[in-house]
Image (tube, rainbow, N blue to C red; front, side, top):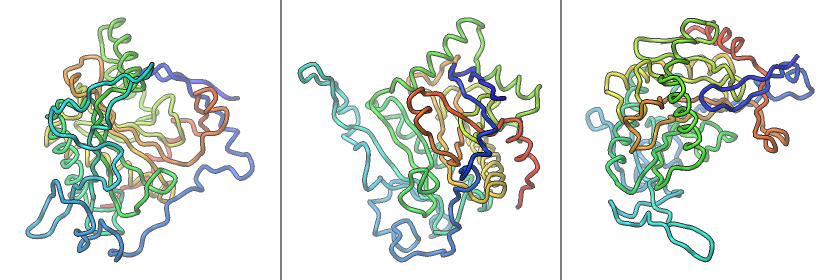
Length: 337
């Protein structure tokens, strides 16, 4: 029998229909990213030695003369920088329509000089360098008054939207806050108005007590399978301390986040045989950095299934794996050094 669960933080519903996993040619667990063998690829712009193939470097983390993480402008940006407080984010009216110039920022974080690395398998020190780079770039972009929302995300695998297999993630800054984000902010504000508490903080406390969906935790973060997970093996990582904006994270907490992120990615890597996935750091808009009702988090969404007509037409997700089973299986996977 199927069950329908509501996400307390968004009020969205997910249908859990585990019997659908038995249908012919069912996809879950089949779609995976092939392991990359070569450490260096001649025509890859992100490989060490090919630095001249990328736009001019914005930021890097180095050991001696060697870089470990690089940040460069996206060669094919969704949004382009127009200067600090340039007024380029002003709205314009044409007939009955509203528009603005495509002002913003779109950067690529190259996570390693090696083509065959993966955040799931590299040493913890390398993941720390990547997360600290996220923090540095988020804080730097927050200084531009044209930008309202900053999104850090990773696409791993073709079905997840990546165009280059070299390990990398991206950061984008937009001059507006989309309705999708405002809706989440609104739902968390309603909960705060009703109960005087952050819905995410309450969720953390409940999940810790309930234990069924917790996968792992450390002093600063917990990782769990959400009660109304939108896709199979959906995992969320939340800071125990209330913070609405990712830009508020300390260096210590960034290293702690790197540790638990590596654990989760490694567990997914070995349980699901290197699956394709997306992850997003879901933060409040810049001007909501002190918001008491919102709580930033990192959301990991493996690409094991495809949204079909019902999901697209209704906006309701169908999940074939209960989060309790997801958490149980992931807890069993042992972490490798």
